[in-house]
Structure formats: C-alpha cells, structure tokens
Length: 600
Image 1 (tube, rainbow, N blue to C red):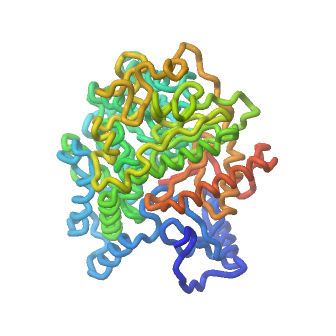
Image 2: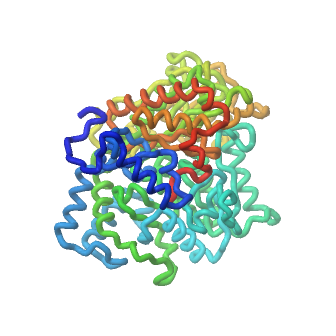
Image 3: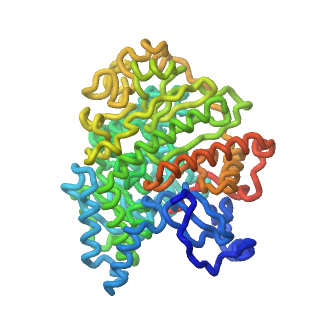
C-alpha cells in the first residue's frame, strides 16, 4: 500500500472545498481554552487514520510523525489494538472497575511484567493511576516521600514530567508557568551541544555527575534531603537529548550509595521507542521506580507506576483515581506490548533510527542552520540555529545514542576501520562526514530478541553502549567496561583519538559556544512540513527542535517519504527570508516553549 493510501470509506464529514474543516477550526478557536497548543500550530481536522497516515476533513492526507506525542507505538487503529478493544466490548465486560481485579487487568499486568528489566520485575509492585503520565509522576513522588520520610527531590534542567503541581515542579520550565519548585534541587543534565559547563562530551557528563555527588555530600550545599531522583533516559520535550549511558550508571551508583530511590520517567521513551523496550535498558540501569504511560495503553489513556516491593509501605488509598480501571485501555495496552515484544519492534526502531540519523546528517552537511542532529531509536530531533549570530559548532560523527567525537572526522573508510561509529548525537556542519549504518540488516537475519532489545553484537559484549567514557574507568579514552577500546558499535577508546588525528575529549579549553536557537525557523519548518503532508512536533528549550516520533511500524517507504518531505521543508524555510527574521508565522506565533509539546 502506498505511503498515503487509505482504503475507500464514505465520510460525510469530508468537504471537497475544506469548508467543513474551516468551520470546525473556527468553532474550536471560539470555544476552546487559550491554553491549547497543537491545534494552533497544526490547523487540521483529522477524521480518520490508519498506521502512519492521517486524513483531514478537507481530504488531505498526512504522514504522522507526532503519533499522539508518542502514545501510538503501532500507529493509528492497528488491527491488533482494534481487535482487543472489540473483544472487550463484545464480551459485555465492565468498562470501568476502579481498582477491582479483572481478567483484562490480570492479562495486562502479566504482559507488562514480562517486558520489565529482570532486576525489577522479580520484585515489583504496580500502582494503577489516573490515566495520564503526570498522575503517575505524582504517585511516584508520593511513593518515595512516604517510603523515605524525606521531602526533597532531585530533578534536572530541561526535564518535563507533566502539568500537575508536583510533576510541574520537577520540570525544568516550572518557573515559566508560575509553578512552585519548593523542595526541588535542580541538577545539570548532560547536554552536549549546549553544555552547561562549556566543555561537552564525556568531560561535560563527568562534571554533571560530580556536581550532583558533591552537592549531595556537602553539608552546606543547601539541598533538602532528597526522597528521590527523577530523570528521563532521553529528554523529549527538553529537545530530544539522550542521557549518556555511563552518566546514567553514575546516577544509579550515586543514588544507591546514598539510599535515594531512582525514578525513571519512561512515559515517552518506553515500549520500544528508543531502540530498547525501556530506554534504561541501553545502560543496564535498573531503577527503583518506573513511571509509564502513553504507549502502554495502546493509544488509550493509561498510566502506572512500577516499583520495588521494599517501597510499598504507603497505606490503602494513599493514591487513587476514578478512572484507573480503564478496561479498554488495558486490553489495547496488552495487545500493543505483546506485539512490540513478539515482533522485535524495539530492535527495528534502533535500525530505522540509525538510517534516519545517517540520512539527516548527510542532509545537514553544508546547512549551518541545522545545529545538531541527535536522538535514539525513533526519537529524533534537529536543533535549528541562527549561524550568523555566532560561530558554528564543530562537526562530528552521528549515531543514535547521545555522545560526540570532538573534532573533524576522517574519511568514512578510516572511521570504520579504526573507530567505528561513535556514540550519541553529533554536531553537523559543512565538514561533516556520513558515518556507517551498523546492524542495518539485523532485523532480516535474526529470529530472536536479545536482552534489552540490543543487537547480537551488543548482547555478546554485555549490552554495553557508547558514552561509557574514560571518566568512568579513570583512563582517558578508556574503553567501556570489559570492552577494550570502546563498545560494540565502536565508540572511541584507547588511542583512537590520536589514531584518527583528533584531540582528546577535553584539553582544558572551553568548547566553542553554539549559535543561538532559532524558534522562528523551526516554526516555519513545521508549517512547510504540514504543507507537504508531514506532521512534526516542536520542542527544546526555545522551541527550536524539530521532533520526529513516528510509529514503530513505519515502513521503509514511509521512512524515505518522511525524510524527503522534511528535507524539502527545511530548504524551503531556510530560503524564505521571513522564516529567519525572528518573526513567527501566524499559525505558530502562540506556540510557547518550554511546554509546547506533550501535556500529560
């Protein structure tokens, strides 16, 4: 089936001239809250959808790289999801049961526990929450505060955890919307492109970890005794910023040594999105608490908290909610979790994500308005900048996990031979070279899943991924644990920097400042994408990151169509003078960061 083809269907709502759609949009503008967001930047009226294709009331069709802010792991109206919902409806089972036990709930819990990191699943408890990720965050914070008897919270710059009071306080943009962050200690999140310490790379991640450690051990540090640390394995609304795997392990070590529960917010990163079933699986970290929502409900509202049984000391009714017994969502969620697991869609996301990042990197070369391409799996971001306002960043090799090499790459053949594909997001610029696609044919040759959704080569080496870094081993350029000279995908280690003619990760000199973000250009690109039949999201600190969240079922043909349309939209927006003047297009003007994205 073609990328935009939907089966014939009579739709009384569709108007040839789009008059019906315009009427609906006008009534929405008159009657709905000024706080609405997506509808301002995406003035479409969806009337039907299947897979990745959405059809508007005006008859236009779009490829959807928003996927309900990541809630639709299998895309719209996947057959297994519809079948599961119909089965519950046809059975005359109750649709809403509070927290009573039902066969549907029992099946969902079984499937959920089958996907969890083994170190957690063996001794886990689950709390069903109100059907939104933000309520699950509230439950997690209440849980650890009850269990520890402490009130403080460790959170990170750039974070987004939801729109209710506690979740918003833990989010990086709390002050921008008038939320109180009392009791929250904000720590620096490793953001290589705009490193808070001005160095980036492994050294920047090291300083972030040391900052947290020193602050916690400083009796005059001013941080309230923390009940927990909450973090996202990949910051989504913060700009698609993957946490380095080694840094995540350091956070686990720091919290374990101080009896601080570690909360992993996997609301958007979970269910295969990043190339592992749960994003913490890339690093091998087992958190004390996992916050889950979005895709676990198969597109319907559902949220849970999974946590170690030792924390389960809160009393009955400590957290409740009328709609925590949504049977349709549990049935849809069971079908989705099983389909992703049985069909190895997490591994597929890793492979397709690598292909997309490579193609985007090739496209970004020579276009300084694209400051950085980064992401993990099918969670991809392009940060747009104003290059004439400051020096462009250095170029470096690109992959899907969030680290960066420090200087110009050599020819692709030499890179393959001596270093492989370096870990994490990379800066791009005129001198950028395309890196190899590793494990490109893996999904066609392997018949079984491996631990945490890694490739066979990663599993053989203990599922070690890039960003392990010298700062964990105490030797500059040292390899990942147990893997001399790097990781399974060839992260730079040992003497690789010298062999490739590169300087070491940190030479005591602050890194060149990245150019300013360009939210006006990003908004213009979003509108150009929409004109070409592509729905994308904006995010990042300044709303200047183009975000791609396609369903895990995206086909090769759809992948090429998405990249073609995005490339065309980027070039069109870059060529348009108004897009770079700092003036937002009218449809996008009310779109206000930092909460321009996933309002849970």
